[in-house]
Image (cartoon, rainbow, N blue to C red):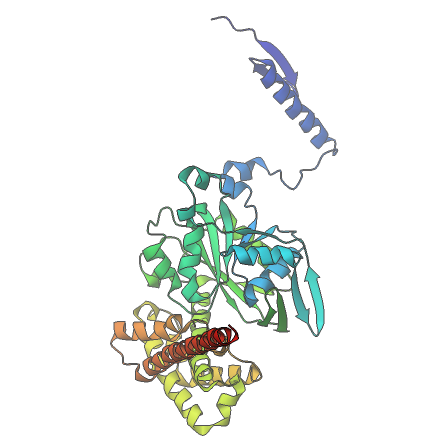
Length: 438
């Protein structure tokens, strides 16, 4: 075969091309080189250096895309509102699991209101969509759904499994999921039931939030107390839990995780800080201890956090709960190599931490107390339930904590039974009134 070659000379380099398309491409590159040397061109936001581009492995790592938020509770609304106003101009998209909620979102103007110091701040034109379950879609329609590379999960622990199952087919091994939740043991449950293959499961990040926030209405929230968000990445392939708490382990963060970390830390309203996973795991355990004591007690007694300290009998119960939890944590095999674990999680230190947090949030109602009042399921199985499960693994009896967990579950069950009886009574009265009118 005979080829017609043309020759282009630029910057003393001999470049040969076979067709006009390649010739135009190289001419453009040469023009760009001249402009760069003369200072007439600067890279745009979407353009990257050749060194960065050479290390990329997927479209997800090239352009992470939209930050999806799963859960429109108090934390989800706060995060979405903050990210919309970030200097990074991140694109935020809410995921609704019910179509009626999405319709309500459109009716009220696609906006979220955050109230600080009595002053409302409304941010509008936030995108949203209905998270369609793969069961409701034919196979060819699933391929047309947008891939989710950045996902923030702000639903409660009992709802996490079903919520992520609806969008699991849109996640890839390059995706990153940030969990902003109370409790522990959720990741192990997801790995066991949803993302069973370690080679294809997404990357995980944890966030421990201390902001004081509560919902006023469906899309309005009050930011009562400014706190922080502790962020960290979870190692991808830990062979055992102790490796995840090893501070010397080199954790390579994918670009999607780096994008989330950079975006959150550059958002002033969130006050996010990055921690190594070893420190983040200990912070998570400290918060777990506080939640194990304050949340179930306030839920059963139906009181504010500070009112727990007003009774000597309740403070004695708190002391027993703390001593059981402290013993379980200090006996966990994966923490035995962690320095100062015995002193950091001693009963005295944990009791002091719990009392301090009860005083700081004295006028607040715990989330578990609010859930029981509203007749909603609680996170007790991922808070106290986690301690009870781990206590059985290490051979320690947590009698008081297990009793408290059962009390919360039974109280919810009794409230639901009473509510159903009231509804039945009202329906019967309506039927009787209709019969009398006829």
